[in-house]
Length: 330
Ligand SMILES: NC(=O)c1ccc[n+]([C@@H]2O[C@H](COP(=O)([O-])OP(=O)(O)OC[C@H]3O[C@@H](n4cnc5c(N)ncnc54)[C@H](OP(=O)(O)O)[C@@H]3O)[C@@H](O)[C@H]2O)c1
Image (cartoon, rainbow, N blue to C red):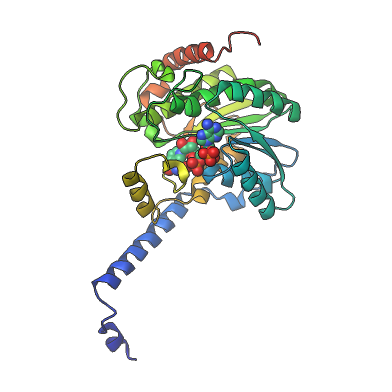
């Protein structure tokens, strides 16, 4: 059929033109995402003999990160709250790389008791830890108190990583050289400081602002950890993965989940979302870099103003130590 008659057939109605435009738009957005990604394939870092711990390793970004670390020879501890979901992820990663050395650990990061018991088990299994990726988080949960009297979102997204990092500090230092990566969010800029939020009190929070504030606290404490661990061989940085189509929105109202699903056509997939986290985990040029906030394009950028203030971070540190009883001997 000649080209002119093909172009004049009914197939080329407004629907098909729209479809082609959407397809082209998706293609250009995906190509743009690719240009923003760090070149993982050309990173030669080998992790044989190293131990990595990834929280929330059973889905989304955490699963992709765990798989890549295991592929590079690390012994990876998948720290998951559900044994069943953890085991499923472990089997998937094992199937993808037969030699992967994986260990499943159960931890509910919203529970300080669970974190303490996980840390005790982990320190016996792995006396040295070279990489800790504080990745697990929840989003879209209205104010809910945990049995320990913490707000669930702040407990999971901030108190959990704070306590876990402190409890694993010895093992991180024993490794000689270690990295801690806190997975934050660009939404941290929309949060504000109020340590009362940790216990479900404090200033008012509009829709999903508990998530934004919890990420702001995590970003702020990253700097304080870095200051305190200076000279120990342990670096601590935070990173925003960008907007990634994962299960993170599952607690949000239907309208948001639907919009997220529609946008899934254009936003990053978990492999692309894991890229900045893997950059912080693997890139040799980051040796010794600590206390920084990295953008989704793997560039150091300033976080929210409040997260840059060492006095605020110090106050947050003190409140968190008290809350988690780290000032008391076990
Ligand atoms: N996706 C995005 O657009 C985006 C944007 C900015 C930042 N981030 C950050 O990226 C990180 C990974 O999120 P994701 O997008 O990959 O979402 P995801 O697929 O929902 O992964 C979150 C993980 O956290 C785990 N988790 C939640 N609560 C937990 C708890 N109490 N104890 C232990 N584990 C818990 C989940 O386990 P279950 O399966 O058991 O629930 C899941 O494995 C998060 O820190 C998130 O804030 C994501």
